Structures are given as structure tokens and as C-alpha cells.
Image 1 (cartoon, rainbow, N blue to C red):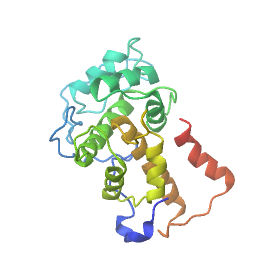
Image 2: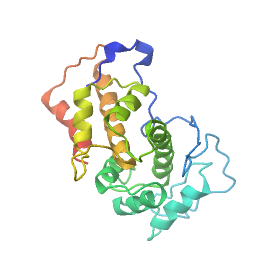
Image 3: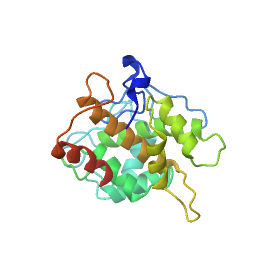
Image 4: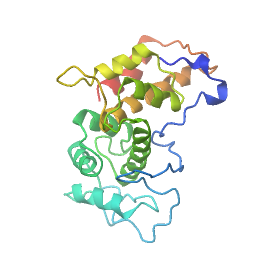
Length: 236
């Protein structure tokens, strides 16, 4: 999918907002943010309402340093006080904080940030990680939405992905954009579409890299492995 041969080996691992279990503490600029990401430092002075014995199943904590507004967003949609939220609740939380998120994007995020003990739901740790990740994607969105249209077109998408280390060919850019055409046939991505595209490109690239250990841009897959790699990203 990506032409890795254009880049030296040290740049093979892109600097896109990371996936769960590998997200960095790096903090992008918050200029222009409507909802800034969590800070890199963790110094939250009191325990989460979902501390052990005080919350839902599993008694899960928010990570130390989680901003109060993130906790409030989680609490507002966790109406049964279980300490976990399902896809409709996540959609409500994200749509009220960032932008109206489609259920398709929400399902992909639920898959990527799923709770290991309750895969169909998301707990405080995953929610906080997702919130920080979305803040980073939002910074990238604002940076490349050069005409301030609130949408990313094909040229802006190509430039955004290249800036993250993904030399995605024009044919693939057009396939991505074509999934989001409006009633007039114009292709462009709003914020949740952009997050979905970015997460798919990043996730599949990372899966591909597991097989392409020499950075050649080529890898061999069995049919079963290929399906297991692709399907979770296209059928969330």
C-alpha cells in the first residue's frame, strides 16, 4: 500500500497518533484546539470514581493525570454506572465533545481500543487513551485543512499522510476519498472520516510491518492471515 522504498529505515515507523498500548506521552500544539488532548504529565490529585471497589465490573481506574473533563465526559454517558460504556454511549461522548461521529467510525474505535476483559465495551483506561489520540488527530486535521473548510480533500489527505510517514499512492488516496462522497459526488473527509482513514492506514501499515521486517515494501501472507488482518478494519 505504501511505497516504503522512498524513505530510509529510521523513518519507516511513522509518527502518527499511536494505537492502544503504544501511545506516547508526546503532546502536540494545542493552538486552535476546541478540545485539547490530555497533558503529557500525570499528576491528577485524587482517585477516579472508578477506583477499585468504587466503580463497575473490574473496578478500573482512570490513568493518573486524566483531565477532569475527560472523566466528566465518560461519567455523562455511563448511565448505569458500570464503569464501562458501549458503542452508542461512546458515540454520544465523542459527538458532544469533538464532532458528530458516525457509528461506523465508533465501531472501529471500539475495536482498536477495546477492553481486554470486556471486548464489547470500553473502560476508563481505554477511553482516556482514545481521547488523547483523538486530540492528536485533531491537531493534524487542523494543520492540513488549509482552506478551513472543515473537510480534508484528496490533496490535503495525501499531504497529511506523507507528513506522518505514509507514502500512500494516489490510487489508494482516491479509494479512501471515494468512500466519503457527498450528494454532489464531491469527496472530502470531515473529522471522524479523517480519523477513520488515518486509523485504517496506520493500523494496516503496522500489521504489514510485522511481516516486512527488512523494510522492502513487500511481504508474503497466507490467505487466512490476509483476511484476519484486513477484515477487522473494514468490517468493524
